[in-house]
Amino acid sequence: MSTMWTTKLRKATVEKFEPQDVLPDDQPSYVASWIYVFGVLTLASLLVIIVTGFALTTKGIAWWHTSNVGHFVNSAHLWSVEIFFIFMVVHLWGKFWMAAWRGRRFATWVTGAIAFLASVATGFTGYLIQTNFDSQWIATQAKDGLNSAGIGSFFNTLNTGQSILLHVSLLPLVVGLITIWHVILVRRNGVVPPLDAKEIAGGGM
Amino acid sequence: MRSTTMDPKKGRDMVFLAISLDHPAKFFNWGFISISIPNLIMIGIIFVLFTLALVVPFPSHEKTKGE
Image (cartoon, rainbow over all chains, first blue to last red; front, side):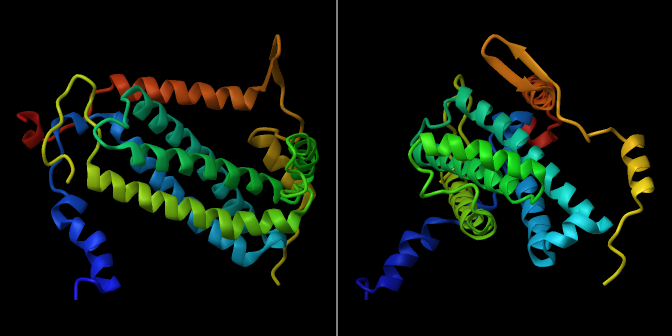
């Protein structure tokens, strides 16, 4: 029975997460600081990005270039990305100066770093598929840079089809999955205490 | 399909009334550093937000105060 893969998967996942740890009622007192809020604000921005991006993907290029609602959703998508990065950088700085990898939280830190890098790649491909003069300028300038780095044939910024597919399918999937993993690790290990505070049992699992 | 064209004059007025973005951004140049003013403003906002997050007191409810 215990050799079944379903049993192993259950023990490796569900049984490790007690409901009171996944959605806790209380947090240690040091969590009562604005610096801890920016991770959640980043997630909220990501939600707006996904919703507006879904609308842009389904309605298409002509819609966001020519209709008033399309202009609005396009702008909402751009500005939610700007806000997403602002919140994420504040979150990153806060966690860096707290040395947030302490207390067996290395995987939490690394998944956050990968989420950041994947978000930069997603943002970049987004700028490439605006289908305007700005995206043409960015694509030609980046083409030189990526060619000099030796990856120009693998990732061709002048290939709009490649950029669109990367932006609306592969990269959002990577960002989404790594973000979910990151949040699961935060819930499992608890938030990192300040450097001068001792680890409180119950702050995580 | 509904009308998808914008009155050019109306559109121009709207842009004029808000903020004109129909030109290249100005750049800040200092030695080898060259950065557009909009990007510089964004980085400034991040610094301000980070500082505020550290110094502004967080409204805590009674239960967490005594912990």
